[in-house]
Length: 213
Image 1 (cartoon, rainbow, N blue to C red):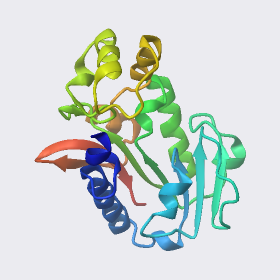
Image 2: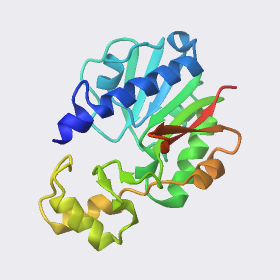
Image 3: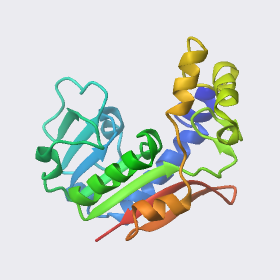
Image 4: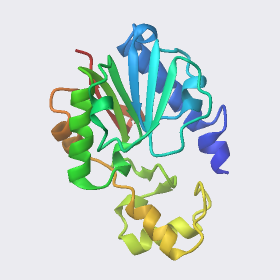
């Protein structure tokens, strides 16, 4: 059921991801000539991308892909505590999709934002909006407003969960690792950016901090 709504080609989630790509390409029409660093991205998403930048550098806590093409570099690193060699890499654009809500609390979100500002003058940072009525990770109405024990119960039994947790402790860890952001928080982390609302049925589904210069 989740695959039908969120993950599969042609699903609602896939259509919104395609629309987001259209927005990104419209905001940065020179994307194919840019050096891009993607915080939390994957090689697979760039292999499927409608536009391929001149260079893409992925920073992720997951294992880097084997034998990437020459235009793609991937490093295992924490986007909140990157080594100076990456921070001083001289990129044209920072991209991040659905990562900021996972980094862990205000202090680390501040570190993430500071890294974005240091990496490049331009950025595109997307995160789900806290006050959209459906929690996006579990695709469950109102789940983000429940106390942690209730969220853990939902995570164990909700049919649209991506990967069912093995037990209650794992479910609790999963829900505590997600902190959805408000518009006020995004403005605080990216004060010189335009905060764009991605809408569904007239309601803001996610927030995107966009800085073009």
